[in-house]
Length: 85
Image (cartoon, rainbow, N blue to C red; front, side, top):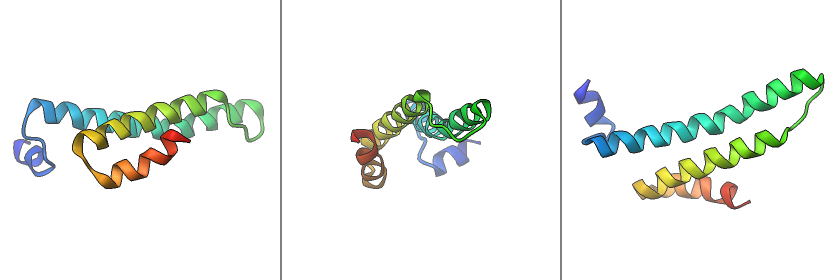
């Protein structure tokens, strides 16, 4: 297990926490689709509930924080416009 974590850049407890933060952000961002799906099923039509936007913003901000911590330009440039908009 240790070699797998090292292979993905987890060399310390702090690294592991940041990877968990990044994964949490991705899960939040993905959860927005579940929020929309459940709301649409309840409404019987396609809707975009307010919760969709809150979950989107939360996920985007958390992934952006991870990208900034890692100084990863792909993540930063991918998340920054959506977070600002």
